[in-house]
Every structure is written in C-alpha cells, then in structure tokens.
Image 1: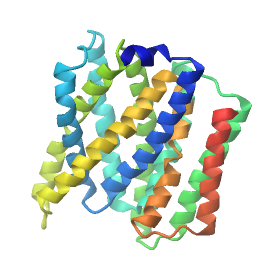
Image 2 (image 1 turned 180 degrees about the vertical axis):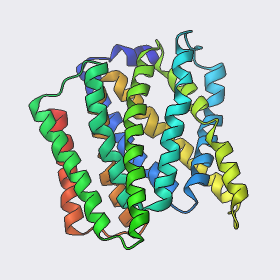
Image 3 (image 1 turned 90 degrees about the vertical axis):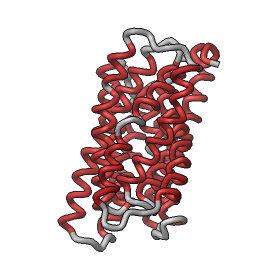
Image 4 (image 1 turned 180 degrees about the horizontal axis):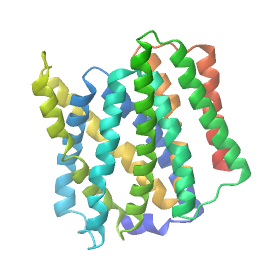
Length: 299
C-alpha cells in the first residue's frame, strides 16, 4: 500500500485523495476537539487519548512497518517539544474559554501561518483566486469567533486569556503542520513516520495528566475516562494521520486550509451535542467558510 500511495504523489488522483483526506481530517479533528473539551477535564482527556493512540501504535512501529532511516531520528526528536507546546496551550485555552470561541481562533490562526511557511520551506505558491479563498475562509472563521465572543457570558478577563492562549495554540498548529509535513516527506515509507509519530507523541502527556489527576479535589472515575480516551485515540488516527498523508500527496498549505473547515463541523457538534445555539448569523458564516474552502481547492 505504501508503494501505491507514494506513486500517487503529485498526480491528479493524488490531489483528489489529498482533498478527501483533508476533509476527513476536518471532520475528525472537530470530533477530537469536542472530546477533549467535553465531559471530562481537558488535561485528563488529552492524556487518556494520547495514552490510547500511543499504546495502539507501538506494536505497528516496532514490529510491522519498516524501521526509520537514520536521519529520521533527529526529526522524531523534534516531535516532543512542538506537539507538547501545542497540547499544553490548547488545554489551557480549553480550560478558560467556551469551545465555540476558542476553537475558531485556534483553527483560524494556524492555516494562515502554515501557508506562508509552506511558501518559504516547500516553495509552494497560491494563485490570486486561492488567496481570495483563504481570505474568505479565515475572515469567516474569525468573524465566527467574534460573534461567539460577544454572546459568551463569562468573566471577560478570563475570556481574553483564553483568546490569547488560543492564538498561541494556533501558532503551534502551524508549526506542527509544517514540521510533520517535512517529516512524512523525509521517509521512504509514510506509514513508518505515522506509526512512530503516534507512538512517540503519546508518551509524555499521560504523565502530565496523572499529575493533574492526583491534584484534583474530586477526580473522576477512571473507567469512563479511559473509554472515551480510547475513542479519542481512534479519532486521532483519522484526524492527524489523514492530514499528514494529505501533505505528502499534495501541497501543505492547501491541506492546512481545507482542514480548517473543521470549524463548520465544530459548530455543528457544539449545536447538536453541547447544546450551543447556531442561528442564522453562524449559519451564514459557516457557509462562507465552506465556500472559501471550495475557492481554495479550485481557485
């Protein structure tokens, strides 16, 4: 299967497959974010999800896929600080702000920086029409965040902290998207990178979560937490794995922008499962986000 996927790189069929993978990543990333922000404390939930996908990936990394080439070990070493920073700031943002306020800011900041970085690192260039699509999509995302912000009744000081943390998280999203794209392109077998990525990335945060758990006055039962963490582990494969594979098959910037249609799915999840209202304004902004993604793809 690896040879088949590698053979699709740079082809029309590969571009269509990358489009499908980026949209799959959008849907599943919204689900992943809702799981972390949902029933359990975000610090605990992230640790449960990381432990699940790390343990599930270990047998494949050690015994199934080819071992990484020597130059890949330095790349894998960079996974720890980049993804740890992303997770720490995301957990802090989720702990302070509403999901429908924080999530759009994170997802709106990331792709803009990624598109610029991909131009410098990978030599990618967007057409004028594609930049128009980026402006439409990101403008609608930030407008959605602003609209949600105006209707959120919490301490304003705490809310501005959440927005600042969300912005920093978005910068980490851009950093890990670009770095992971470089990593998955640097190995002959993309599944080697994915298996080792998930195993390595799942090692550290569970220990942070255990420390947080021990400090809680009323810690939750572990069995329901781990069951939801297991579900999150499978969702993580579809989310992060899909977008990384899309960046190997097609352009990094385009995959990053298309993934941010996750804001539409996040709003739907917030409406259906978290009982947060959508309304005509949010509906119109969601439609503009989707239209911007279409322009980016076909611009």
